Every structure is written in structure tokens, then in C-alpha cells.
Length: 347
Image (cartoon, rainbow, N blue to C red; front, top):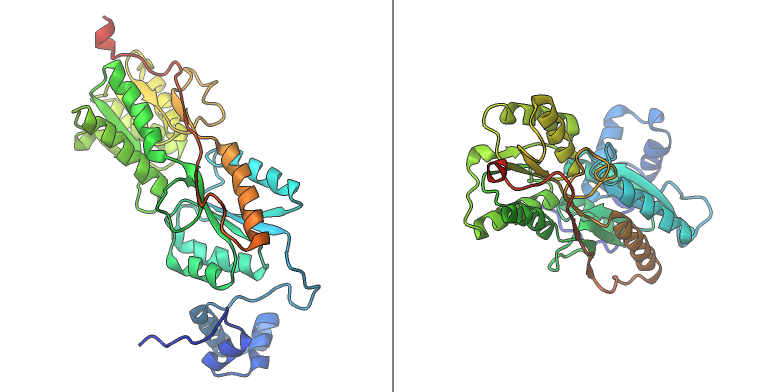
């Protein structure tokens, strides 16, 4: 049976001690000098702290200030170029506010966000910026109870419970898919990551499929392929499905996947765009210089980063939500040399 929580505000060391059945001094010692506390007792204290959502204040005892001067940014990955421009712009804009950034990545494993948020709160963070809307309840509750402002970025949803600054990812995928349809393609493959914990990917898949449906074009099961945002994995996957029965065009979940697909086409002797047209989403660094240049949709990553920095600082200072609460940034379709009408149309 769930215990009733009558406390107001975040839990403290007194509540942890009461739940663990030990003294306040023992709890304090367990955090400050864990080697001086018996393992079983330490385990009880850690369990109680976790159940209560207790956050240790690592800055306690030092100079008390209203702001720590640090903002947390939690991203799915820093392993490739997907978020690089946004992170750079976010950090630069924070410097304009005399703030610094603590960045963490969960590798698309949302279960890790609780530990990350706990670590940020221990450092008395001024605010937290998250990517997308798919998050577990526990870290969001921890932030709410501590009164720490939160904003979601990279995706846009006017119905979101969190304030957001981002792009309409469904529209981004519609734009590139409609471009292929207008060129005459109907045999189009879709290569996207699994969307269970990635609302951006889910919106993009839905946008691409919606464009196909509106045009009366089907996407059979063997033309829908799952691939993470990894160039090597995308190349290996494309080598397999392109060597047998290649489609005339491929919609990729982002530019990283598209780059891998083009590498596979080159390895197989397939010409892009004469044999296979390829589109991406994001317009990452290098997509314009790729050979051939990649047709894609430009997500204004730098603008998102700057707006997010301004918004989270303002929220931390005012204690009020941003205005507007939901903010959409403009997308731009970029046509380059990786797309053309189906080759059979050119002969």
C-alpha cells in the first residue's frame, strides 16, 4: 500500500532517517563518510532516500546563493553530430547570461534520466533542458518538487504539458517524402529508428507515412526498416536490403542514416540519384558537402539552442513559465543533388 505523503516541499535528511530507522547523524555519515557505516545500514538509507526522492545538497555548508549559475542539458547522445550545433549554441548563449552548462547523455535509455536528474539536483542546478517529450515520471516529479524549471526542446507539440521550443518533426518528414512523390517515386523505403522512446522519430515516421497515404502510395512491410542514428549501422543495413531489390527512393530518419545509406549505394555500385534517391532530415554539418549533396530539411539547431538558453534562464529568475509556452521554429526544405525522378522515367 502506498504511503501517504503529507510533506510540503522536497524531502530532507529527517525523513530519510525516519524511513530507514536510523539516526539523523547516521544518515549524514552515510553520505559524507560511507566507509564508516555498515553496508546493510547504508543500503537501508540509500533505499529510503530513493523511495522518498531525497536529493543530497552537495553545496550545503558553503556560501548560500539564489542561483548556482549552472543549467543542466540532458540529451540522448553526444556521440555524433545530431545535437552538436544546438549544444554549441546553447552553451554560447548561456555565457551571455553569465551561466554555465552541465551536459549529460542517456544514450536513448530514458531509465537513466532519474540518476542524471538526481546528480544535477545535488548540484543545485538552476534549470534543466530536456530533449523531446518522452520521459519517465520520476525525474519530472523530482524536478517539480524542487521547484526547478524545465523546458523541452527539439520537438514541438502545442498540447505538451512541458513548455517547449522545437520543430514540427512530422512536417519535416512530410516535406522530404512529398518531394520524392512529386518527382514520381512510389517505391519508397523508410529507414527510421525505433520510436518507442523517441517522440521525434515517431512524429517523423507518422509524417512520412501520412504523406504516402495522402498520395495513395503504400509502404509494404519489407520497405520499413529500423536503424539507430548510427552511420555504420545504416550502411550495413542498406548493404543488405539494397543488394536484392532496391527501391527507387529512401526516406531516412535523419542525415546520419542518410549518409550511411549513400555509402552503401556507392559500395554496391548504385548511383545516387540515378538509381536510388536518398533524403534525410536535419541538414547536419557535412550534408551540403556530401557527394552528392544531400536533399534534406534544415532543423534550425542553433536557433533552438539560443532560444532554449534564454528561456531557461528567464524561467529560473522569474519563477514563471515562458511566454509563449509552446514555441515552434521554422523548417526549411533544402533540395540538393541526392534526388531525381526514378531512373526509368529518364531513359
